[in-house]
Structures are given as structure tokens and as C-alpha cells.
Length: 146
Image 1 (cartoon, rainbow, N blue to C red):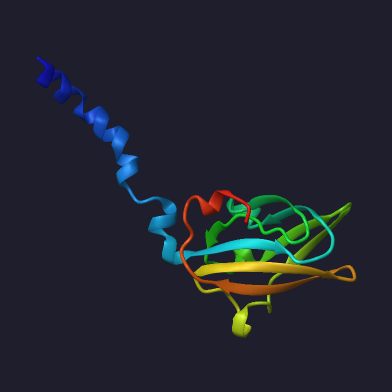
Image 2 (image 1 turned 120 degrees about the vertical axis):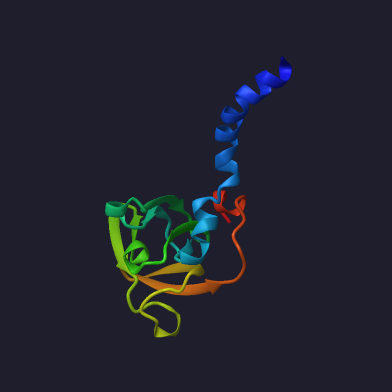
């Protein structure tokens, strides 16, 4: 009788375990993603930072970044439109920085991989340095400020 109960519940167990056995989006598309984080290299606090493409649902709210802080890692599709703009609020001013012409080696887009967008404030303009980073992102890293 116990064997029959277990066999009857087998489809329920299979359905419950299937998501754990299936590759997640980050693993399945890891080679087609750009992992980014934003660093505040300015002397002023970034009261709010956003990155991504809201129309495609890839926008990420990174919250505030004090001088010297670095945001958590986040993955975006490796298509320029998804990581082209970064919005930074400094006090009551909001600046949108378009990342064109800022990529390593004068590239037009970023190759899939890990990058830190390091921002400074010169006068009233944001200046960006894109820093290629090595190594995989672990799930515990993606959830914490570094």
C-alpha cells in the first residue's frame, strides 16, 4: 500500500523537483550575458542608481551608492540596448549617462563577461571607465554590496 501511495505521488515529486534540475537563466544563458556592477568613484553620494532597459524588463534598481561603494552584480543580455544607459541621481539632479564610446579597446559593445562601470563626477558631468573583471559570479556575490 505504501508503494502505491509513493507511485501515485511520483508525478507531484517530479513536478516539484523539475525546476531544480533545469538550468537557470543565468546558467543557461551565461555565455550571452553581461554581468555588471556600478562603482561610485566620485566624492558625492549617488542617491540612486538605475541601469538597464525598462521597456524590455531588464532595468535594475541598484539603490544608493556612497563614495567608494560598489553595487551588487547583475546580469543583462549581451545586447547594447540593455546596458547602454545608466541613470544616476545626485541629490535632486538626475543624470543619464550613455555608455557609447566607453568600452575597452574602443569596442562598440561589450563581449559577454563581467565588467565594473566606475563613475566619477567632473563638474556636472559623469565620466565612465569600464573595467573588465575576471572570474565567475557566485550566487552569494550577486546579492551583496561589495
